[in-house]
Image 1 (spheres, rainbow, N blue to C red):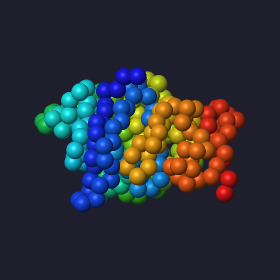
Image 2: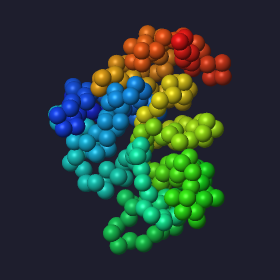
Image 3: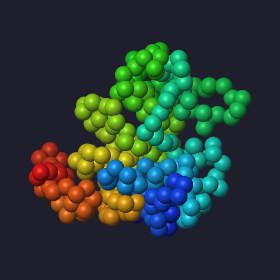
Image 4: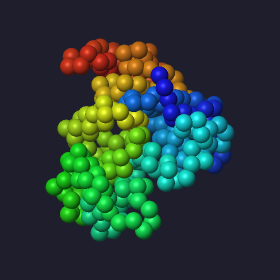
Amino acid sequence: MTARLTAQDLTLTYGDRTVSANLSLDIPDGAFTAIIGANASGKSTLLRAFVRLLRPSAGTVRLDGRDVHRYRPKDIAQEMAFLPQDLAAPDNILVRQLVDRGRFPHRSLLSVRTAADTRAVDEAMAAAGVGDLADRQVARLSGGQRQRVWVAMVLAQQTPYVLLDEPTTFLDLAHQYQLLRLLAALRDDGRTIVAVLHDINQACRFADHIVAMKDGRVRAEGSPDDIVDAALMEDVFGLPSLVVPDPVTGTPLVVPTI
């Protein structure tokens, strides 16, 4: 396994509160990594450290062996796209205008939109299923529609790394699976996907690599077949369960017994 993106001995804090200490993790290249864990286990905090929104109190996040904080913001934005949980669109902005913002890292200050930009925006909207909403105001969309527009903006950025914090929030079940299939397809095309997911069975079905967190620490990591069992569910979630093969995919299927 190779890993361009790594975290080494991280201590992550908010004010006086330490979320994680001595946390190390390698993100495998070209894989779909799902980060799972109970609420307040440090999942979102870790993603924020990877994309430079939170500077570690100790330790280092490195891309290609170099501290991510030593890169120019534009250079990092050409490598990593990030979809956080809480997003707010500017007033009156149209869908196409918002998705077009994903192209900013590829432009200079005075450059104009190119044919490549237009193509990237069109392809991203089509992939996220929002092409028919291009001329609608984002504020007038449903929560699920808005979430897919934000996903389209991330896709338009066309980065090797795509990091998403609970990307299935607000999506109905069908759109959840459509998005996860899209992320898996991006992985198959060579991109590296990292997503915080709450649905363990979705993580097992779509991800190659699972990172299970508890109390700011990595409790287990590896392929779903290797690490997802009843003992892990009890440890990480306090959830008594059976783990059986998914009848469709053969991947682990967690069945709570409470």
